[in-house]
Length: 286
Image 1 (tube, rainbow, N blue to C red):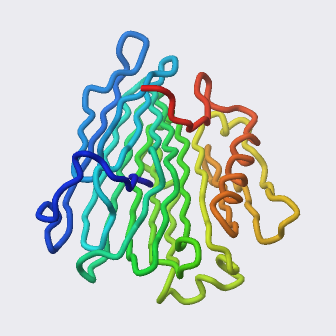
Image 2 (image 1 turned 90 degrees about the vertical axis):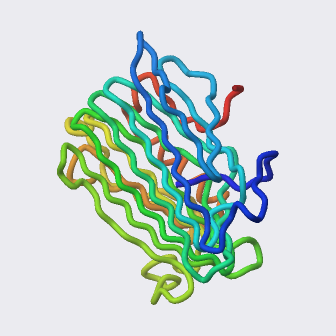
Image 3 (image 1 turned 30 degrees about the vertical axis):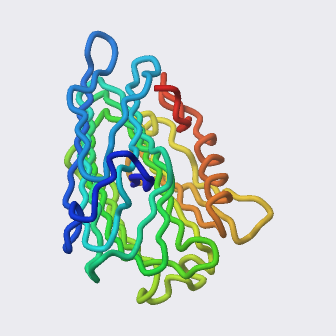
């Protein structure tokens, strides 16, 4: 889940961010056309600037670049992505997202809606979300997959910048496949959440993330439960098969570098990666 925070020539003046925050919706539509993937809809809005990148085979690639600081308290942000039948799409971001305290005490919301059609493939691999001190963010993921759709989704959350306390964040991830619920989970971290920093949750760590992979090939050959991590006992991950052709990796680590290392290790444990697609989330030349 991530849009980026950076300075851009079209950064809005103070009058563009009202006292109640920014309202913005970005949309991407990917469609299979003549053996490749076209992007008939690529609409940025508010803090979302969408950059079309060079395609990789049949796979279209899009990078999210921040046009203003967001999310701030009071912002209402939404991202809608539809990958039609037979299309392949990879989405990344140019930099980490930085959630900050806003001009109001209201929380920021960021809702991501992903729809992937039959025999379509989506990689959602943005940079991490950093929840700065005083921030309050509520993010939701609503994902609808056709029975033959494939998905790789990574999310990383860093609780506080170096030397500062964490912000507050709640997340809910709902995934439906063929109209049936595959995964529905909710998590909350930061001030006011009981036990979030205790041994049953983050155990003092400040970085957490997930890697969700949905692939019909897992119906025949699903990965087994596996613990991942090195000698550091405070940096661990577990790969768990779900009740469907999917796996979920959950990781905790002291910092973003170790968290990404764990998730990269997890990505390479799959025996059958997506045909014609890679997990590489580096931004290629436009």
